[in-house]
Length: 276
Image (cartoon, rainbow, N blue to C red; front, side, top):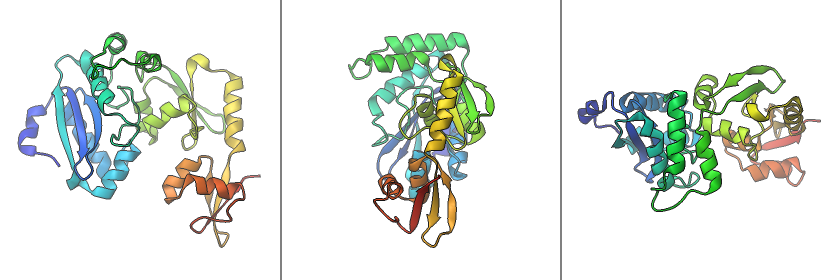
């Protein structure tokens, strides 16, 4: 997985790196101020089954360490260029987890890279102006996401009982601290389907926050709570996110939904019922 004889060359080097599953050629793209240190964090988290990217972690568990290789794609001397260059490669490889493990199409979602506000602004401008991605231009929606530059837009975190946790700027730091996925924090903030909450937390951008929005999110969560049982009636647990439950128990989201709607009595030995 790692050529240790040459790896010392990358100590204290900044750059763009890839993690490739040589069994299926699926790839993960990242950037780091210190790629040597970043790799050590990656491999430690993967071996301990706590990596922030659930797709990469699942694949690592399935194919084992020997089927993955870590490579430095490009060394970067000016760290202000890191996100610009990471975005360049994401524009090439990102395809919604078909052949690329990255969750977000926008550079800057990796933890371990902290920039000053001045640097963030430089990166934001460079991303908007960068049109060197295989001759394609970014659409306006992508440009807007780049200009935010992940980690620079403040957001609020609450428990699902309404308790305020804190105000944050960096999704990756929050993901690491609370054992969440930074890409899914982004999905919650963007109100993506099936991401009303993450575990016991909800997220709201600070600039759109209001008590009305918070109350609405909490109401939605409670309206979709459901319980999971074995067919013999043994209680398994309570959930709000069908996709999360499906991943945990190797089920199909559609089958869980059919059980909840009464179209199926059970699926793979499990019964599901909305909380009344």
